[in-house]
Image (cartoon, rainbow, N blue to C red; front, side, top):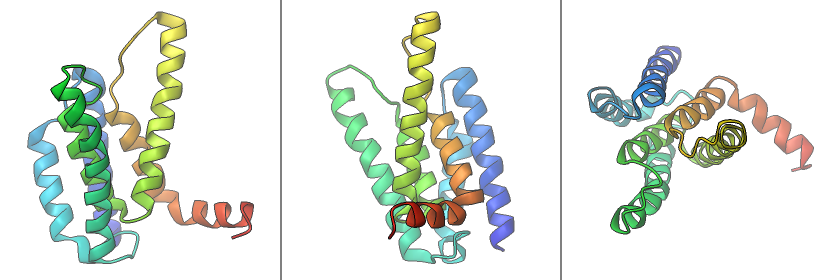
Length: 157
């Protein structure tokens, strides 16, 4: 069941990434059913954490991006779209707590680096956040446990 879910989440993240990069929209037709399925399958979490850490990861990740989206929406200075909030919640459900927080950070760092390069090279001022959140989630989904061991060894934890 775990491998099947990992493959399903991979397909969802690839579809969402492509749509967001190409059209700057995260399709509701993909993300809403994926969110529902992620909640329903939380007990069979691919990272082996079970239901509550998965739900906590979704709430925290979605909540962090909602905390960015809401003020920027009120001030009419959009920094992220609501699709990014939904995607962050999905990524949190897929990875669980605390992996979701690390993937969220990695996705933002990766997006920042790419944005800097695109700005310096092409003067491009905006990029889609979704592909970078999805890339960090995929990286963690497929290779996360090995990186946890690496970080623990590196920091002598």
